[in-house]
Length: 462
Figure: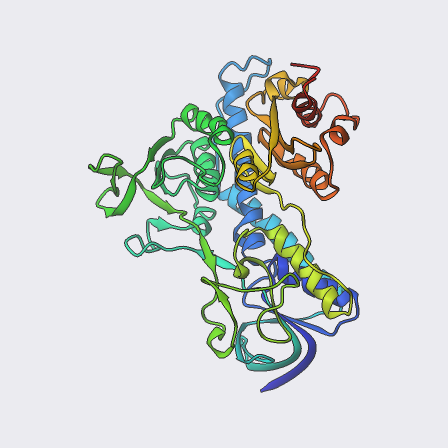
């Protein structure tokens, strides 16, 4: 049995874990990182990156079909075809480049990587089952970054025609009929992509609206797109189980129906991965089914930290990355604490949705007296030239001093505005700050400035 000692041991090489290890290595901290598979975790291997590759292909295929059907902008092409095997191979190439890059960065910063499954023996010691041996690691400090996994329904267990988002990104052909259980961001991102590729998609959602985490004003353009793609949506409906030719559901009026489906994609959420690595050997305080942490990501055990999805919502890669960087610096002796004003959340549907800070309802519930207005992309020149006029930018601010509390947007490509939204909130911007900043013309970012102007009562282009 090989034995190792180190100052920092990181369990899990997802976005949070590998960033923590790289930053610790940069700061001269003796670091070991353990990952069961390729570096990058769920996000890089079977989540964020491959799904966005799929979405890009679906968007390009939809454009080609648009041009094949007498597009008004003057481009005419023959009806396109899609080879999903080539798409998967291309997607896998991107993943390989990125995972290889992470591995090189770890090595460059003198982080020792061990591939295998780690299991705690106590708060300072883990045992790792590798392909060839069992290795023991004793560390002064440990970061738990084990991530999350897809929630499985007991009456629709994964396997065969019932798939998770992981298998949905490996299909060799678009299914003729696809049933999606869950109208959250994962289900709608993939459902829209497959609808664009030619699948007949049906979405089943137990709640009374799609994308329940966003308000109806934000999701209305997405609902419009679903309708234009021919996606059938059952709201207030419950999946009951697999039928002979698809999915059996109970509709909102209590009737039983069978939805024809070659594949059933279950996307009812993700849960922290707390099983299989020895949680029972640790005396950690829990907050529901995730690990409780303080504002330095410290757990209830001295020298044991936790970051990312295993610590609960928001389950976002960029939150995990920021936590990982912070903890590495704390272990290196720097004075850091979690004091983020906002973490932007992005839904890569069509159109895209971005939310940073408080929504109007959240701000009111927090006791703020607010003013809020939106600026439509239908009045934005750049959006017109991109054939992306659906959607808007909305700003929420305090009425008394005009401090911006939240910024939301829905529209084509608005994910790229998230950095500007986050920066404005972190810097404590007022409506006057945003309105007084010159935004380049013609860009979608002008809608951000115009939303601030409109909230102040003097929009220029509406």
